[in-house]
Amino acid sequence: MFKRLSKYIFILFLLVPVLTSAQQNADIGVFGGTAYYLGDINPGRHFYRPSISFGILYRYNVNSRWAIRANGYVADLSGSDLDFPGRLNPDRPFSPRNFQTSLLDLALQTEFNFLPYIPTAGKWQYSPYITAGIAGSMVMGSDVDAVNTLTIPFGIGVKVNLTSRLSTGAEWGFRKTFSDTIDGIENPSGTTSIIHNNDWYSFMGIFITYKFFNFAAECPAYK
Image 1 (cartoon, rainbow, N blue to C red):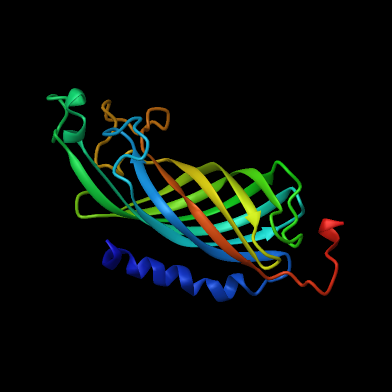
Image 2: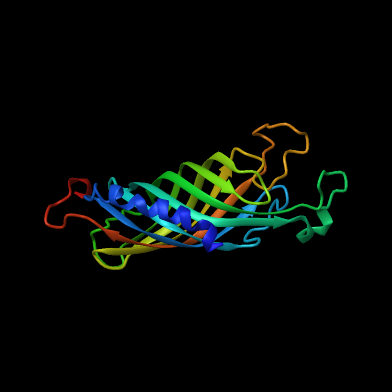
């Protein structure tokens, strides 16, 4: 898996100098956790065949309630009809079906903090938050054709200050895709209707970020 994803990780870290050029009111960090697939094979079992996921994120803190975040994550997705014997359909082409793919996910999201969150406030300042935005994914594997798809990311999380420079948090996010071919199984009707599309994937993990705030100057956004 790591060999397959190494080229994606290299692309992500090439973005770091660009992201850090806008340092004031911003933080940058790393994410690590797990990812899993939901779709035609697995319609509802969470944390099914979880894989290792990791990436980088950049957050611009607009004020104590709102932030804008860009992130890039990589993971593997997999599934097999044989894990769900009660749902095997002899009329479905190529059944039983299994697949394994590598995933690169690039997202731009907003975050809304339920509590006023001031990144420079120091130790143990925290807030739960919700996030949503727009994303794109590139899915590649030997079992399915390459897929590039627009997705809708959304999720929930919590963030907390460890020090005046470091923060951490946890997030559980979902991606609603606009493709029904990530698992290699198209809609039973043979259409491409978004309404009947079943392919999703999810990330859950923790992050740690370093803050690039200018502590020598008061930031008007947090008055």
